[in-house]
Amino acid sequence: MNLLILCPHYAPDVAPTGEVMTAITEALADRGHRIHIVTALPWYRLHEVEPDWQGRLWQTESTPWGWITRLHPFPTDKANIVARALGFAGFTGAATVAAVGSRFSPDVVMVMSPPLPLGVSGWLASLLRRVPFVFNIQDVFPDVAVELGAISNPQVIAVASWLERFLYRRSDAVTVLSEDLRDNVARKVGRKNPERVRVIPNFVDTERIVPRSSATSYQQQYGLAGKTVVMYAGNVGLSQSLDLVVAAARHFRDRDDVAFVVNGGGSALDDLVRSANDVPNLTFVEMQPRERLPEVLASGDIHLIPLKTGLARSSVPSKLYSILAAGRPVVASVDEGTEVANTVERAGAGISVPPDDEPAFIEAIGDLLDDPASRAAKGSSARCFVEEWVSPAAVAESYETLFEEVRARRHRIGVADPGDV
Image (cartoon, rainbow, N blue to C red; front, side):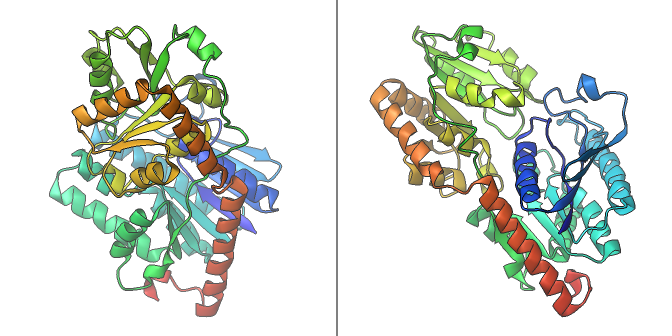
Protein backbone atom coordinates (compact mmCIF):
# COMPACT_ATOMS: atom_id res chain seq x y z
CA MET A 1 0.00 0.00 0.00
CA ASN A 2 1.17 3.54 -0.76
CA LEU A 3 0.69 5.94 2.16
CA LEU A 4 0.92 9.73 2.16
CA ILE A 5 1.43 10.94 5.75
CA LEU A 6 1.39 14.61 6.82
CA CYS A 7 2.72 15.36 10.30
CA PRO A 8 4.20 18.40 12.08
CA HIS A 9 7.34 16.61 13.37
CA TYR A 10 9.51 13.69 12.34
CA ALA A 11 12.94 12.37 13.39
CA PRO A 12 15.46 13.79 14.03
CA ASP A 13 13.03 16.33 15.55
CA VAL A 14 12.57 15.56 19.26
CA ALA A 15 8.86 16.39 19.65
CA PRO A 16 6.93 13.51 21.26
CA THR A 17 4.50 13.33 18.34
CA GLY A 18 7.49 13.11 16.02
CA GLU A 19 8.78 10.13 17.99
CA VAL A 20 5.36 8.50 17.64
CA MET A 21 5.05 9.05 13.89
CA THR A 22 8.63 8.01 13.24
CA ALA A 23 8.14 4.67 14.99
CA ILE A 24 4.76 4.05 13.31
CA THR A 25 6.26 4.83 9.89
CA GLU A 26 9.18 2.48 10.45
CA ALA A 27 6.82 -0.28 11.59
CA LEU A 28 4.57 0.27 8.55
CA ALA A 29 7.65 0.16 6.32
CA ASP A 30 8.65 -3.15 7.93
CA ARG A 31 5.25 -4.46 6.84
CA GLY A 32 6.11 -3.63 3.23
CA HIS A 33 4.33 -0.31 2.69
CA ARG A 34 5.71 2.57 0.62
CA ILE A 35 5.42 5.94 2.34
CA HIS A 36 5.81 9.64 1.55
CA ILE A 37 6.18 11.78 4.69
CA VAL A 38 5.44 15.51 4.47
CA THR A 39 6.67 17.25 7.62
CA ALA A 40 8.57 20.23 8.99
CA LEU A 41 12.29 20.84 9.19
CA PRO A 42 13.50 19.97 12.73
CA TRP A 43 12.63 22.89 15.05
CA TYR A 44 10.96 21.68 18.25
CA ARG A 45 13.98 21.72 20.58
CA LEU A 46 15.07 25.32 19.92
CA HIS A 47 11.71 26.60 18.65
CA GLU A 48 13.58 27.61 15.53
CA VAL A 49 14.96 25.56 12.68
CA GLU A 50 17.96 23.55 13.89
CA PRO A 51 21.32 25.04 12.79
CA ASP A 52 22.18 22.09 10.56
CA TRP A 53 18.91 22.55 8.65
CA GLN A 54 18.79 26.32 8.26
CA GLY A 55 18.86 28.00 4.87
CA ARG A 56 16.41 25.51 3.38
CA LEU A 57 12.74 26.18 2.76
CA TRP A 58 12.02 22.79 1.21
CA GLN A 59 13.95 19.53 1.07
CA THR A 60 13.10 16.02 -0.11
CA GLU A 61 15.20 13.01 0.80
CA SER A 62 14.96 9.38 -0.29
CA THR A 63 14.70 6.53 2.20
CA PRO A 64 14.61 2.73 1.75
CA TRP A 65 10.82 2.88 2.11
CA GLY A 66 9.99 6.09 0.24
CA TRP A 67 10.54 9.81 0.70
CA ILE A 68 10.52 12.55 3.33
CA THR A 69 9.67 16.10 2.28
CA ARG A 70 10.62 18.65 4.94
CA LEU A 71 9.18 22.17 4.86
CA HIS A 72 9.96 25.37 6.73
CA PRO A 73 7.65 25.49 9.81
CA PHE A 74 7.64 29.31 10.16
CA PRO A 75 8.06 28.98 13.97
CA THR A 76 6.77 31.77 16.19
CA ASP A 77 6.21 32.48 19.88
CA LYS A 78 3.38 30.18 21.04
CA ALA A 79 1.97 33.00 23.15
CA ASN A 80 1.46 35.16 20.04
CA ILE A 81 -1.71 33.59 18.68
CA VAL A 82 -1.91 35.78 15.57
CA ALA A 83 1.70 35.09 14.58
CA ARG A 84 1.26 31.42 15.34
CA ALA A 85 -1.85 31.26 13.15
CA LEU A 86 0.08 32.89 10.30
CA GLY A 87 2.91 30.39 10.81
CA PHE A 88 0.47 27.49 10.67
CA ALA A 89 -1.06 28.98 7.54
CA GLY A 90 2.34 29.20 5.87
CA PHE A 91 3.24 25.63 6.78
CA THR A 92 -0.21 24.37 5.78
CA GLY A 93 0.04 26.09 2.41
CA ALA A 94 3.44 24.56 1.74
CA ALA A 95 2.23 21.15 2.91
CA THR A 96 -0.77 21.37 0.57
CA VAL A 97 1.50 22.09 -2.39
CA ALA A 98 3.82 19.22 -1.40
CA ALA A 99 0.96 16.75 -0.87
CA VAL A 100 -1.07 17.65 -3.93
CA GLY A 101 1.97 18.00 -6.17
CA SER A 102 3.66 14.77 -5.10
CA ARG A 103 4.42 12.30 -7.90
CA PHE A 104 3.67 9.59 -5.34
CA SER A 105 0.24 7.98 -5.91
CA PRO A 106 -1.18 7.19 -2.46
CA ASP A 107 -3.84 4.65 -1.59
CA VAL A 108 -4.57 6.46 1.70
CA VAL A 109 -3.75 9.91 3.12
CA MET A 110 -3.20 10.26 6.88
CA VAL A 111 -2.74 13.55 8.76
CA MET A 112 -1.59 14.05 12.36
CA SER A 113 -3.16 16.96 14.25
CA PRO A 114 -2.49 19.46 15.76
CA PRO A 115 -2.04 21.69 13.91
CA LEU A 116 -5.69 21.48 12.89
CA PRO A 117 -5.23 23.35 9.55
CA LEU A 118 -2.90 20.58 8.37
CA GLY A 119 -6.07 18.51 8.01
CA VAL A 120 -7.09 20.78 5.13
CA SER A 121 -3.93 19.79 3.26
CA GLY A 122 -4.66 16.10 3.75
CA TRP A 123 -8.32 16.42 2.85
CA LEU A 124 -7.53 18.29 -0.38
CA ALA A 125 -4.87 15.74 -1.33
CA SER A 126 -7.28 12.86 -0.68
CA LEU A 127 -10.05 14.62 -2.61
CA LEU A 128 -7.88 15.22 -5.68
CA ARG A 129 -6.39 11.72 -5.54
CA ARG A 130 -9.83 10.21 -4.82
CA VAL A 131 -8.51 8.14 -1.91
CA PRO A 132 -9.50 7.83 1.78
CA PHE A 133 -8.47 10.41 4.38
CA VAL A 134 -7.59 9.30 7.94
CA PHE A 135 -7.33 12.06 10.56
CA ASN A 136 -5.06 11.22 13.53
CA ILE A 137 -5.88 13.39 16.58
CA GLN A 138 -3.21 13.75 19.27
CA ASP A 139 -4.78 16.79 21.02
CA VAL A 140 -8.36 17.93 20.43
CA PHE A 141 -8.26 21.44 18.99
CA PRO A 142 -9.61 24.07 19.60
CA ASP A 143 -10.63 22.58 22.98
CA VAL A 144 -7.07 22.74 24.32
CA ALA A 145 -6.58 26.37 23.27
CA VAL A 146 -9.95 27.39 24.72
CA GLU A 147 -9.24 25.68 28.06
CA LEU A 148 -5.91 27.50 28.23
CA GLY A 149 -7.48 30.85 27.44
CA ALA A 150 -5.15 31.11 24.45
CA ILE A 151 -8.22 31.65 22.28
CA SER A 152 -11.06 33.69 23.73
CA ASN A 153 -12.46 35.57 20.74
CA PRO A 154 -15.91 34.03 20.04
CA GLN A 155 -15.53 34.46 16.28
CA VAL A 156 -12.13 32.73 16.25
CA ILE A 157 -13.48 29.89 18.40
CA ALA A 158 -16.49 29.53 16.10
CA VAL A 159 -14.30 29.34 12.97
CA ALA A 160 -11.91 26.83 14.55
CA SER A 161 -14.81 24.69 15.79
CA TRP A 162 -16.42 24.80 12.35
CA LEU A 163 -13.15 23.70 10.72
CA GLU A 164 -12.74 20.93 13.29
CA ARG A 165 -16.19 19.48 12.56
CA PHE A 166 -15.76 20.00 8.80
CA LEU A 167 -12.61 17.89 8.79
CA TYR A 168 -13.99 15.21 11.11
CA ARG A 169 -17.04 14.75 8.90
CA ARG A 170 -14.97 14.56 5.72
CA SER A 171 -12.55 12.04 7.12
CA ASP A 172 -13.06 8.40 6.30
CA ALA A 173 -11.84 7.70 9.84
CA VAL A 174 -10.72 9.75 12.84
CA THR A 175 -8.29 8.13 15.28
CA VAL A 176 -7.91 9.24 18.90
CA LEU A 177 -5.79 8.03 21.80
CA SER A 178 -8.38 7.15 24.45
CA GLU A 179 -12.05 6.50 25.12
CA ASP A 180 -12.63 9.93 26.69
CA LEU A 181 -11.18 11.61 23.59
CA ARG A 182 -13.35 9.33 21.45
CA ASP A 183 -16.47 10.54 23.26
CA ASN A 184 -15.37 14.15 22.71
CA VAL A 185 -14.82 13.71 18.96
CA ALA A 186 -17.83 11.42 18.38
CA ARG A 187 -20.14 14.14 19.72
CA LYS A 188 -18.76 16.51 17.09
CA VAL A 189 -19.05 14.00 14.28
CA GLY A 190 -22.73 13.80 15.16
CA ARG A 191 -25.28 11.20 14.20
CA LYS A 192 -23.76 10.61 10.79
CA ASN A 193 -21.33 7.69 11.12
CA PRO A 194 -19.96 8.25 14.67
CA GLU A 195 -18.40 4.78 14.35
CA ARG A 196 -15.73 6.29 12.11
CA VAL A 197 -14.02 7.55 15.33
CA ARG A 198 -11.56 4.87 16.42
CA VAL A 199 -9.30 4.50 19.46
CA ILE A 200 -5.72 3.57 18.52
CA PRO A 201 -3.51 4.43 21.50
CA ASN A 202 0.05 5.59 21.20
CA PHE A 203 2.61 2.96 22.07
CA VAL A 204 5.67 2.76 24.24
CA ASP A 205 8.94 1.29 23.01
CA THR A 206 9.74 -1.11 25.86
CA GLU A 207 12.89 -2.31 24.12
CA ARG A 208 14.44 1.13 23.87
CA ILE A 209 13.23 2.44 27.25
CA VAL A 210 13.97 0.06 30.13
CA PRO A 211 14.41 0.39 33.91
CA ARG A 212 17.98 1.26 34.85
CA SER A 213 19.92 2.79 37.69
CA SER A 214 19.35 6.48 38.38
CA ALA A 215 23.11 6.92 38.84
CA THR A 216 23.53 8.23 35.29
CA SER A 217 26.00 10.50 33.56
CA TYR A 218 23.10 12.98 33.33
CA GLN A 219 22.92 13.14 37.14
CA GLN A 220 26.69 13.63 37.32
CA GLN A 221 26.61 16.32 34.63
CA TYR A 222 23.99 18.43 36.42
CA GLY A 223 25.12 17.96 40.02
CA LEU A 224 22.29 15.61 41.00
CA ALA A 225 24.29 12.57 42.09
CA GLY A 226 23.32 11.12 45.46
CA LYS A 227 19.98 12.95 45.58
CA THR A 228 16.41 11.83 45.08
CA VAL A 229 15.48 13.56 41.83
CA VAL A 230 11.94 14.82 41.22
CA MET A 231 11.66 15.56 37.50
CA TYR A 232 9.41 17.19 34.96
CA ALA A 233 10.63 16.34 31.45
CA GLY A 234 8.81 17.76 28.45
CA ASN A 235 7.45 20.88 26.87
CA VAL A 236 7.45 24.01 29.04
CA GLY A 237 4.35 25.62 27.61
CA LEU A 238 0.88 26.89 28.30
CA SER A 239 -0.70 23.48 28.95
CA GLN A 240 1.40 22.57 31.98
CA SER A 241 0.91 23.87 35.53
CA LEU A 242 4.63 24.09 36.13
CA ASP A 243 4.12 26.67 38.84
CA LEU A 244 3.22 23.60 40.94
CA VAL A 245 6.73 22.23 40.37
CA VAL A 246 8.28 25.52 41.51
CA ALA A 247 6.03 25.54 44.58
CA ALA A 248 6.95 21.96 45.44
CA ALA A 249 10.67 22.64 45.04
CA ARG A 250 10.33 25.69 47.26
CA HIS A 251 8.49 23.60 49.87
CA PHE A 252 11.28 21.00 49.99
CA ARG A 253 14.18 23.45 49.64
CA ASP A 254 15.60 22.57 53.07
CA ARG A 255 15.98 18.89 52.24
CA ASP A 256 19.56 18.38 51.11
CA ASP A 257 18.75 14.91 49.81
CA VAL A 258 16.16 16.12 47.26
CA ALA A 259 16.60 17.91 43.93
CA PHE A 260 13.98 19.08 41.44
CA VAL A 261 14.59 19.25 37.69
CA VAL A 262 12.68 20.80 34.80
CA ASN A 263 14.12 19.28 31.63
CA GLY A 264 12.82 20.92 28.47
CA GLY A 265 12.05 24.15 26.74
CA GLY A 266 9.13 26.13 25.42
CA SER A 267 7.30 29.43 25.40
CA ALA A 268 6.78 29.54 29.19
CA LEU A 269 10.38 28.74 30.15
CA ASP A 270 11.70 32.27 30.69
CA ASP A 271 8.82 33.23 32.99
CA LEU A 272 9.19 29.96 34.89
CA VAL A 273 12.91 30.51 35.44
CA ARG A 274 12.25 34.01 36.75
CA SER A 275 9.62 32.71 39.17
CA ALA A 276 12.14 30.21 40.57
CA ASN A 277 15.07 32.56 41.20
CA ASP A 278 14.78 31.94 44.95
CA VAL A 279 14.61 28.13 44.65
CA PRO A 280 18.19 26.77 44.72
CA ASN A 281 17.15 23.11 44.61
CA LEU A 282 15.43 23.48 41.21
CA THR A 283 17.65 22.90 38.17
CA PHE A 284 16.62 23.83 34.63
CA VAL A 285 18.07 21.64 31.88
CA GLU A 286 17.61 22.24 28.16
CA MET A 287 15.80 19.66 26.06
CA GLN A 288 18.12 16.75 25.39
CA PRO A 289 18.84 14.94 22.10
CA ARG A 290 16.45 12.17 21.12
CA GLU A 291 18.97 9.41 21.78
CA ARG A 292 19.39 10.52 25.39
CA LEU A 293 15.71 10.09 26.35
CA PRO A 294 16.13 6.72 28.14
CA GLU A 295 18.92 8.18 30.30
CA VAL A 296 16.90 11.30 31.11
CA LEU A 297 13.94 9.19 32.22
CA ALA A 298 16.16 6.97 34.36
CA SER A 299 17.68 10.02 36.07
CA GLY A 300 14.38 10.95 37.69
CA ASP A 301 13.32 9.00 40.78
CA ILE A 302 9.85 10.57 40.68
CA HIS A 303 8.30 12.02 37.52
CA LEU A 304 5.65 14.75 37.34
CA ILE A 305 2.76 15.30 34.93
CA PRO A 306 0.99 18.57 35.84
CA LEU A 307 -1.74 19.56 33.36
CA LYS A 308 -3.96 22.58 33.80
CA THR A 309 -7.62 22.07 34.66
CA GLY A 310 -9.58 20.65 31.72
CA LEU A 311 -6.55 19.83 29.59
CA ALA A 312 -6.47 16.11 30.33
CA ARG A 313 -9.93 15.82 28.74
CA SER A 314 -8.60 16.80 25.33
CA SER A 315 -4.94 15.75 25.52
CA VAL A 316 -3.00 12.62 26.50
CA PRO A 317 0.74 13.34 27.03
CA SER A 318 2.71 10.51 25.46
CA LYS A 319 5.46 11.04 28.06
CA LEU A 320 3.30 9.11 30.55
CA TYR A 321 3.92 5.79 28.84
CA SER A 322 7.66 6.43 28.49
CA ILE A 323 7.88 7.16 32.23
CA LEU A 324 6.09 3.91 33.01
CA ALA A 325 8.41 2.00 30.67
CA ALA A 326 11.39 3.42 32.56
CA GLY A 327 9.96 1.91 35.75
CA ARG A 328 9.46 5.22 37.53
CA PRO A 329 6.52 6.36 39.71
CA VAL A 330 4.37 9.30 38.67
CA VAL A 331 2.64 12.16 40.43
CA ALA A 332 -0.05 13.39 38.04
CA SER A 333 -2.02 16.58 38.57
CA VAL A 334 -4.91 15.99 36.17
CA ASP A 335 -8.68 15.87 35.91
CA GLU A 336 -10.33 12.86 37.54
CA GLY A 337 -11.62 10.15 35.21
CA THR A 338 -9.35 11.06 32.30
CA GLU A 339 -6.92 8.74 30.51
CA VAL A 340 -3.88 9.89 32.50
CA ALA A 341 -5.59 9.51 35.89
CA ASN A 342 -7.11 6.16 34.93
CA THR A 343 -3.81 4.81 33.60
CA VAL A 344 -1.90 5.80 36.74
CA GLU A 345 -4.55 4.05 38.83
CA ARG A 346 -4.79 0.89 36.67
CA ALA A 347 -1.02 0.57 36.53
CA GLY A 348 -0.54 1.17 40.25
CA ALA A 349 2.14 3.54 39.03
CA GLY A 350 1.84 6.51 41.33
CA ILE A 351 -0.52 9.13 42.70
CA SER A 352 -3.10 11.22 40.88
CA VAL A 353 -4.35 14.46 42.42
CA PRO A 354 -6.78 17.15 41.19
CA PRO A 355 -5.36 19.70 38.74
CA ASP A 356 -3.91 22.94 40.11
CA ASP A 357 -4.24 21.68 43.70
CA GLU A 358 -0.91 22.79 45.17
CA PRO A 359 -1.27 21.26 48.68
CA ALA A 360 -2.35 17.87 47.29
CA PHE A 361 0.47 17.92 44.73
CA ILE A 362 3.10 18.68 47.37
CA GLU A 363 1.69 16.06 49.74
CA ALA A 364 1.79 13.37 47.03
CA ILE A 365 5.44 14.16 46.25
CA GLY A 366 6.26 14.12 49.97
CA ASP A 367 4.62 10.71 50.40
CA LEU A 368 6.85 9.22 47.69
CA LEU A 369 9.97 11.01 48.91
CA ASP A 370 9.48 9.55 52.38
CA ASP A 371 8.81 5.99 51.18
CA PRO A 372 11.53 4.55 48.91
CA ALA A 373 9.91 1.12 49.09
CA SER A 374 6.66 2.54 47.74
CA ARG A 375 8.54 4.31 44.94
CA ALA A 376 10.20 1.05 43.95
CA ALA A 377 6.93 -0.90 44.08
CA LYS A 378 5.06 1.65 41.99
CA GLY A 379 7.91 1.81 39.47
CA SER A 380 7.94 -1.98 39.15
CA SER A 381 4.16 -2.03 38.73
CA ALA A 382 4.43 0.67 36.05
CA ARG A 383 6.90 -1.38 34.06
CA CYS A 384 4.79 -4.53 34.31
CA PHE A 385 1.77 -2.59 33.06
CA VAL A 386 3.43 -1.26 29.90
CA GLU A 387 5.06 -4.58 29.07
CA GLU A 388 1.52 -5.66 28.20
CA TRP A 389 0.94 -2.44 26.27
CA VAL A 390 0.84 -2.26 22.50
CA SER A 391 4.16 -2.13 20.66
CA PRO A 392 4.97 0.07 17.65
CA ALA A 393 4.43 -3.00 15.46
CA ALA A 394 0.98 -3.64 16.99
CA VAL A 395 -0.04 -0.02 16.51
CA ALA A 396 1.15 -0.12 12.90
CA GLU A 397 -0.93 -3.27 12.35
CA SER A 398 -3.99 -1.45 13.76
CA TYR A 399 -3.46 1.40 11.31
CA GLU A 400 -2.90 -1.04 8.45
CA THR A 401 -6.20 -2.77 9.25
CA LEU A 402 -7.96 0.60 9.37
CA PHE A 403 -6.44 1.68 6.05
CA GLU A 404 -7.66 -1.52 4.40
CA GLU A 405 -11.12 -1.01 5.90
CA VAL A 406 -11.53 2.58 4.68
CA ARG A 407 -10.30 1.60 1.21
CA ALA A 408 -12.84 -1.21 1.05
CA ARG A 409 -15.61 1.13 2.26
CA ARG A 410 -14.71 3.67 -0.41
CA HIS A 411 -14.92 0.97 -3.09
CA ARG A 412 -18.38 -0.04 -1.84
CA ILE A 413 -19.80 3.48 -1.86
CA GLY A 414 -17.78 4.86 -4.75
CA VAL A 415 -15.39 7.79 -4.48
CA ALA A 416 -17.75 10.32 -2.88
CA ASP A 417 -16.50 12.66 -0.16
CA PRO A 418 -17.30 10.81 3.11
CA GLY A 419 -18.98 13.98 4.37
CA ASP A 420 -21.63 13.45 1.72
CA VAL A 421 -22.54 9.86 2.67
